[in-house]
Image (tube, rainbow, N blue to C red):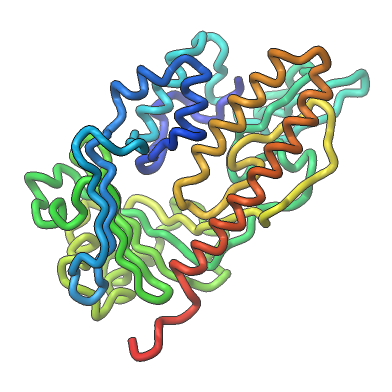
Length: 338
C-alpha cells in the first residue's frame, strides 16, 4: 500500500463519521473488526437536530433512547487507526504519493511515485480520493465544484469552555439552514465540536485548496450570517480557529468508463459526492466486496469487471440522491420574504 501521508497522524483527517449497518459496519464485519469498532464507537453521539436560523429554536430533533441507534459515530483518525492496526505494518509505504499510473508493455501497471517508478503490478486499486491519480488512467473526468463551500472551524473543550454551544449542538449533529447558507456542527470525540459555515460562492473559489484561507476571517464569515440567531453566530465567533476551507466537489452521477483489466477505483476515487453521510460507507463496502471478489475468484480479471459494474450501479443511485439532497439544502437563493 502506497500512502501519501508521512505517518498515521501527519495531518488532520477531518470530522466524525457515522457508519451504517448495511455498508460501513458490514465491511468491518467482513474484516473481523466489527466488535472492536463497537467497543470504541460513540453510540452516545447519534442525536440530530434542526434549528431555526433566526431564533435558534429547535424545529426537529431525533434523540435515540439509551442503548438504541445503529449508526454510531467515530472520528476519522480513530477509524484509520483501527484499520491500520489490523494490517501488517510493513505492508504500508508512507510518504509515497502516486503521481501517475503507467501501463507496462509486458502487462500490468507501474506507479510513478515522487521518487521513481515501482515494479509492475498485476492489480492496482486506487483508493486515492476525490483527486485520484489512478482515476486519470481510466477517464479524463474530474470532480466539478458544486457551488457550495464549507469553512471549517473548531471549538475545543466545549463542555467546560463553551457550555452554551455544547448544549446547542447536543450529542450529535446540528443543522441550521437558510437559503444558500447554513451552519452545521458536529460533536466529535475529545470534547471537540467541528463547525461548518456553508454558503454558495462563485466558481472562482472552486479550486481553492484547503489551506487557502487568505481573506477569510471571523468578521468576513459572520457577515454572511447577518440576521441569524446570536447563539448560532457564536459557534463562529467563539471558535478557536478557522481550520480549513473546503469547496465541495462531486463527480457526475452515473459516471462510467471503459473497463481496464487490473485497474479498480474505490470510494471517492470512483464516485465522490456531496457530504451527506454516504461516502465513507460506500468506500468501505466497495473495498470489502472487491476483496471478496478477488479472494474467491477462479478468474480475477472477470471478477474485477463484474465487481466494477455492480459498484458503479450502486454508486449511481446514491450519487443522484446526494446531488439532489445537497441542492435542496443549499438552494441558489433565499426563500421569498427572507
